[in-house]
Length: 354
Ligand code: V47
Image (cartoon, rainbow, N blue to C red; front, side):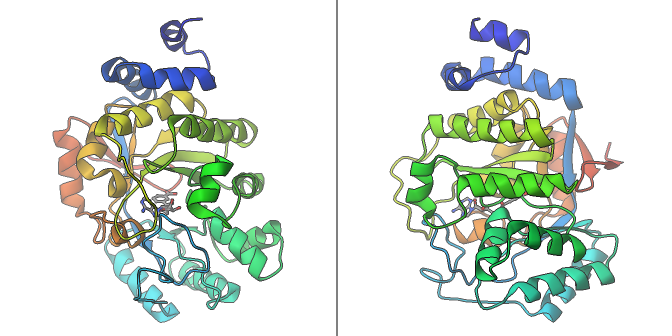
């Protein structure tokens, strides 16, 4: 069946279709992705009032794309104390955050107990706060350090108050590219297995894809399809988040950076290929807020949140270090002719701003 007919009849798309979608002109592609987004959510744009905390940047792994890790380029090592983390959470809680998103480097010195205790402390002091913490890469790192299974770590996370898992650490699943950009880190299959395990406990997570570095279109489509296969079995992913590679202060040698057109096409293709993942998040920290707003016309329906602080992407050049003021955020969405909808971490609608 020809691609346009397949799109019109909303048939499931295969690998070859995914590649062919990139060959469509931008506006034809946008039309299909936007229609699909509109049929699901109309003009709603989801966001949450959240706070990112990156408690330590000391890392045992050596991902070439990472500017956050303190082992190599960044000499300013830090590890926040529990008191500091709690006081930051307290401040943000007073500002109205509903979610705390905790991602760290893979620090062999802090220890499993250090992680688990801070989750319990946050939950005890702020029981209504949703804790989104520990990527599959961190879980794998901790399981190796402590000679525990992934299931044992996951069970401990749950008993210590973690509500959902962020989508980090997926990078690109293609084994060859992965071994070039982040050799030694959680493998693609391990990343998928950890999420499957998490979902089997009745919990939700997200999935990212780091793109715009040395990967090819083929690798992006393959990445999406591996996620789609898992989602068919578990329905545990809330959102897919294409992360645009930030180029500063890291060791990845990238010659050609992506055009905005290629980035927008990738959002649109995600929406069309991932027919079973409900939300496509244009994470403004990596796409820039301007392009994230345009991405809303290319299939994206979520902008993550106000963030408040962010250390991973901003270390590599993104302008997300201090998040975004909520009023600005709402103004930008409404002047783009969309309806801002504050959501909780599981996409229950909390407030519609219109
Ligand atoms: O996994 C590291 C990425 C991720 C760079 O689940 C980089 O809701 C771009 O996963 N350029 C961590 N990206 C952040 C993350 C995330 C962000 C927002 C929302 C959610 C969610 C998850 O940051 C890492 C890695 O892929 N990253 N370095 C860089 N130079």
